[in-house]
Each structure stands twice: as C-alpha cells, then as structure tokens.
Image 1 (tube, rainbow, N blue to C red):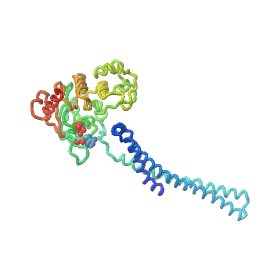
Image 2: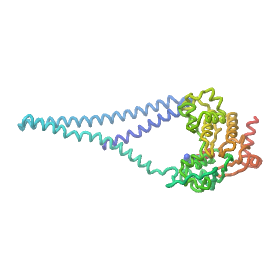
Image 3: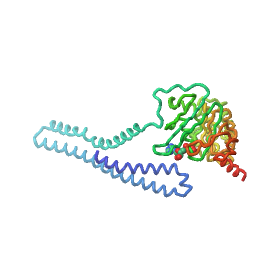
Image 4: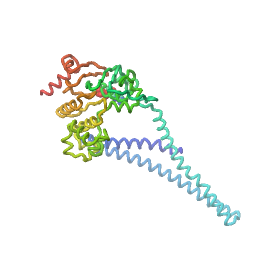
Length: 395
Ligand code: ADP
C-alpha cells in the first residue's frame, strides 16, 4: 500500500497532464490548425504520453516483482516443508498433506498485495466523492416546494443582487423590472453588464444574495427550480446541435409536437426553406459544422417556439452573426414573439422600437429604461449606441 501510494503521487499528475493536453487538442483543434500550432501541441501531447508510459512501466515492473516474489516464497516454502518432512521421516501421504496445507495457506495472503495497491485508488475516489457531497449546490431547493401559481405569468424582479463568488463585485446590483403577460422587454448593455446573470437568476441557476424574483406573487425560491424553468426558459447563448436528425433536434424541445406544429415552428423561425432543402431526416453533425451560425440560431429559435414556455427568455440570439444575418434574424424574432411574454437580451438595437420596454444595464445596475423613442433622444448608453449603429449601417 505504501509503495502504491508513492507511485500514485507520481502517476496521478502525469495522467492529469495527459488528459488535459488531449482535451485541449480535441476541443482546440480548429484554433491549433488556424495558427499552425498543431504539430507543437501534438508533440507536447506525445511527450506527456511517453512520460506517463515510462512511469507506468516502472510501476508495473515493481508490481510484477512483488507478485513474483510472493509466488516464489510460496514455492520455496512448499519445497522447504517437503524437505523438512522427509528429513523427519514423515510418510508420503502426510508429506503431501503438509505440502498442500502450506500451499493453501498462501492463497488468502497473496491477493493482499493487489488489495494494498487498490486501496490507494479507492481512498482517493472516496475523498473526491466526499468533496462533491460537501460542495453546496448552486441553488437551494425548497424542502416543500409550493405549487406554481396559476394564471398568466407576471414576473417581478425587485432589488436583485447576485454575486459570482465571495469578495467579487456584484454582477447584478439592485436590479428591478417587471414582465407582464404579452409584453416584450429588451435588456441591453455592454458586455459584462450582467444581462446573462439576470437570465440565470430567472431560471434559478444562480442564487441571489438579496432581492427577490416573484412569479405571480410567489418568491421563486419557494418553487422547485424545475417548475420555475418550465415557466421561464428559452434560447441559451450557445445552442447545441445534437448528432441526430433535424426532426429530433427540434423534437427535443417538444417531444409531443405533431408534424403541423413542427412545420409551424420552423416557418416562424424562417427555417422552412432550409428544412425543405436539407430534409427532416438529415443527421446534423455533433459539432454543428453542417449548420451555419444564422441557421443555428434559427434552429434554436424554432426549438424555443416549439417549447412555448409562458415566459420566453432569449439570450443574445444575434451575437456572432454578420450585420445582415443578425438584422434579418432580429426582424424574424420580433415577428415571432409578438404577443408573447418575452425578455430579450441583445446588443443590437435594430428593431427595438417594437418592444414595450427597453432596460439598459451597466455594471449590474439599471441606468436607463423606457421605450425606444424615449431613450434615443436623451444622453446615455442607448442613444450613443443607436447613433453608432446608424453610422455603421449608413456607411
Ligand atoms: P453580460 O451577459 O451582460 O455580458 P454577464 O452576466 O455574463 O454579463 O456577466 C456579468 C459579470 O459577472 C461579469 O463581470 C462576468 O465576468 C461575471 N460572471 C458571469 N458569469 C460568471 C460565472 N459563472 N462565474 C464568475 N463570474 C461570472
């Protein structure tokens, strides 16, 4: 056991190093290829592999020696017993019994070496499990969750403060806003302002430090977090395309949906032409290479429309798209969400004259709120961004 512990201390970091390098190689392959760094990363990976193999070979040699020594001791003992018995004039039957007894006496002892070797690994696994169990969950579930309040959803966020980790500046610092049935609210602000954090708080993925989110008057902390997400959910920042047919990729969001509902969701996300060309049964790649950025966002929008949550949350749907694709997507999105209770996070202002309220978030605080017409003329983030967008599109 002591030897195994010493080896584990040397082998575990080497194995972790190799695993991290392989993960980097796989996930970063596109960037490595783009910067011609593939060969360097590969040879660093091969070196880490050789280092681990060297250590494991030496450990295996040690283990083989220990096992061999055990078997050798067993054999020599049997031989010694036979010789001593013969020397003492014991009869052949009794000698055989003595020899077999000596042989069998080793059986329960020999595997102890392997057990000692395994002990280190088992104890390490136990320690890791204990650490996981000791980690508090991101959000606390209520012991007795209350039923989801009935009726059209009214979401009131008041004085919400969220901090990602002790000692860090709050990501949300006293944010209040209200979502009423059928109204669309847009959340805009610079990167890092706390927009995604607000969506995470609404979906019960982060625990607020203070303040409260109420759904029809009930604090959402008193509801099961799955129930909260059944009411408020939507388009995440990085939609994922599964290695499955186009149909199954959509059905994920509404397993019960019939062909008509599927077609309707696809039409409203303006994906119908693409679907016609691609075919419902075409398998989409797991790394989404068969789907362009714009199609991916539209696919995610079709999923969200199919799921049809009472409160639709949309996070930066037009991010990372070129201006033309982004404006077309935003126009379709604003069309498709008309009359739905929606919170739309966006960094593009084009089309926001259609939403009922715009909330500007900067450094975790609401700095402006109002309609497009109210905000565009007054000094501040919104007007400045609007004018710079205008300048770009005129150019
Ligand atoms: P936005 O969506 O407006 O770009 P975010 O809500 O993502 O802003 O981030 C707000 C702040 O919180 C940023 O300073 C960001 O670095 C920090 N933050 C966001 N998510 C996490 C996280 N999971 N862990 C630590 N810090 C985070």
